[in-house]
Length: 202
Image 1 (tube, one colour):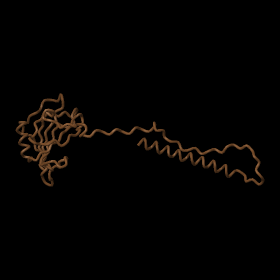
Image 2 (spheres, rainbow, N blue to C red; image 1 turned 60 degrees about the vertical axis):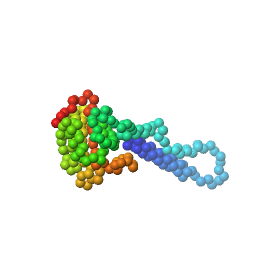
Image 3 (cartoon, rainbow, N blue to C red; image 1 turned 90 degrees about the vertical axis):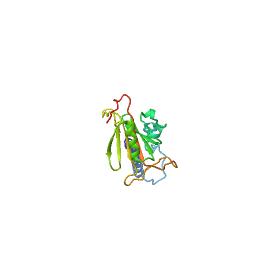
Image 4 (cartoon, rainbow, N blue to C red; image 1 turned 45 degrees about the horizontal axis):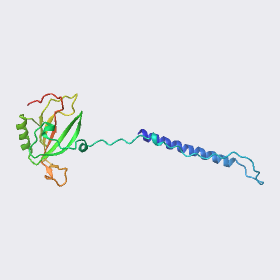
């Protein structure tokens, strides 16, 4: 916005300078009497030349903002159970990771297994029943750490979502030509941040 305002002001000033110079030249032309006899050579002051509009020097223009890193460039490697500290459902595929804010990231995985199978797996390995937070589409959440709203954007958790419910045909696989073409179930993992409180059990 500031750059646009500066460029607009320069353009207006440039047009004004041209109009003033043109008006002076016209006034001098109209006030000069027409010769009725052969002109006598006399010294006359030079006619002022209109000045071109001022231009903003290149150094005054703000530098173009650098592009922010995308999730793919920020986390180029596929996360593992060791890096996230959470068991992975067998054969689920890494989809993408995103910045959750407050120094946290959440990681998405897809699987061709049913929602019920994935929920049963995490009930067993996490040794907790979790909570069904939505019925349609079915979404089950397991808390794996205490949430601190002052230092966290998301609670540490494993969330399982059904993508074959009403009106859903599966989550599209972002890898072209990969199998399956659509995932029946998506697992979102928000790992426990460093120095976070101990995990909770429900």
